[in-house]
Structure formats: C-alpha cells, structure tokens
Amino acid sequence: MDALVMAGGRGSRLKRGEKPLVTLFGRPLIDYVTLALEESSVGRIYVATTKNVPQTKAWAESRDLSVVETPGMGFVADMVYAIKAAKVTDPIMIIMADLPLVSADLIDTIMEIYEERPEPALSTHTPLHLHSRLGRRPDSLFNYRGQLIVPAGINVLDGAEIEKEQEDYHLILERIELAVNVNVAEDLMLCEKIIQGDFL
Image 1 (cartoon, rainbow, N blue to C red):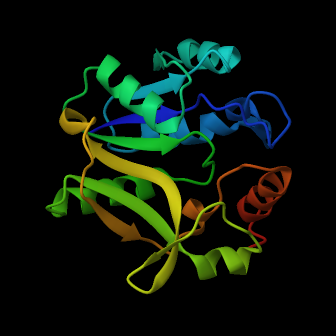
Image 2: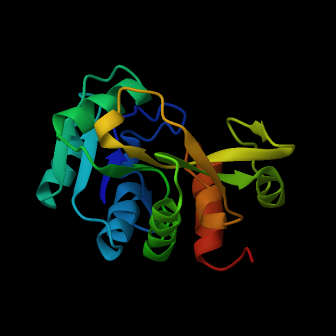
C-alpha cells in the first residue's frame, strides 16, 4: 500500500509559516510523518503540496519523495487530484503532515486492520474522552453509534474509486499518537510534553 501525505495547507492558525516545516525539537512536523511511513510497510510515499508551500515541496524533493502539486482547491479536491495524478488504483493511505506522534507500528496496525475488513475504505478516529484527558478541544466531533469520536487524520481509500463515495470502516483507537494533530501553538507544546514522557 502506498501513502499520500497531505501537506498543502496554509497553516494560518499556527502563524509560523508553512505548517509542515514548523519544527518540533528541531525537526519539521512532516519529517516525523514521513520517517514513520518509511519505517512502516508502506510502499511509495507521495507528498501533496500546493503553491502555498514552496519550501515544503523543496524539502520533500530533497528527500526523493514523490511530490504531487495540487491546485489548492481544498482537502478533498486536492486529495482526489493527487491520487489521480499519481495514477494510484490500489488502496492508499491518506495521512496529514501534522501528526508528529504517529509511529511505524501504528501505521502497520491500521493497514493490517484494513486488510481484514470488507469495506473499501477505512477512517481512523479517537474517542472524545482521550482529548478531554489531554486538555484539547477537537475541531470536529461525531456521534457514531452512541460514542463521541474525533477524526484522526489517517484514512485508507480505494484509489480506483477515488471519485466516488466509499463505505468506510470506522476504526476507533484510544491512542495518544492519533489524538494530537498540530493546529495551534498549544498543540506543539502538548506534543513536546508527550514526547518527553510527561503524559502517560
């Protein structure tokens, strides 16, 4: 399974320039994500950029990652554009560039669960109570079969059917690594604490 890192957003709330290149302990956020993918069972890694992130594009190219420049028409439109441009027709993992806590083991676990499921797509979520424990207010929230869940920013979709709505399996994992994506400065500080072992 290949992976597509979505790295074209402006990151305007963080106010630190191109969000994928914002550093955490001296490393760009996108570096954490791509390294976890490289250490996982993922095949080829694509990075979707836009004209908003020229330095991110240069960073990805300098690391021999496959860059797909998208029109910057929004997350879903750019994702579809990137998958079609890359000519991916197999299942592909879509992952946000602002998930610095994600690990290769977690990526492999998600892929293994997807392989066992009959649905063509998979979406990952974390329970709301995990965010409450971390002191976070998530951007979006869903009631799924009576449980409040938060999208985690990692999905698997069938590349061959990328322009169609795909039935997805809701994978709910109580994993801190999935609960913190970096949107504001407080998220960066929380990641620092977690990496340093201050949150158990």
